[in-house]
Length: 191
View (cartoon, rainbow, N blue to C red):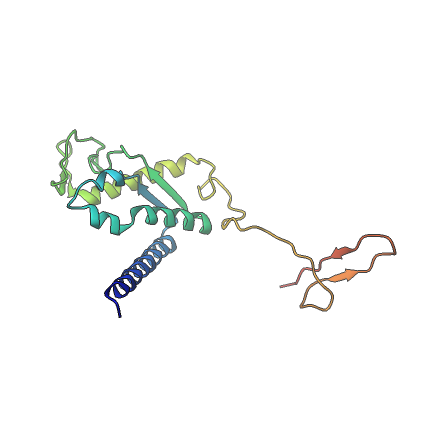
């Protein structure tokens, strides 16, 4: 077997494994949580960092966001995208004070005003939860918000189909008088 063929097979398998893992991850998140908050990250800018580019590209941030969004619409959940410039990791989740500068190498958030000390990511997560609560209580009217009724949460097309005599458990077809069009009478199955 040619080395190029083996290489292509391995790359194909890796792509399928990555896709499967992303689908399982996003399905698990959507099954667990009705509201998901996503940060609108500058992925193109992050890819300019040569040390992180491969790992960021492999993570598939855009695909995760796409899947979480469509699975939320499909299942009746809410997806909230925070603004790119929202300082989720620089804002104190206890008192709301925003730090002017907080470099990425600093992994622990320490508030100078109230003395709160938290892991930087936990602090950002708490701020995003507060953002979601504020947006959901505003009731934007989008399907999935607390104030909106989800009559068709999966947004599936509702179709009626014509039935044929003698096929399945469908309806009956009435025979029209001569010269008139045929009309279908549907019988809905009782459950």
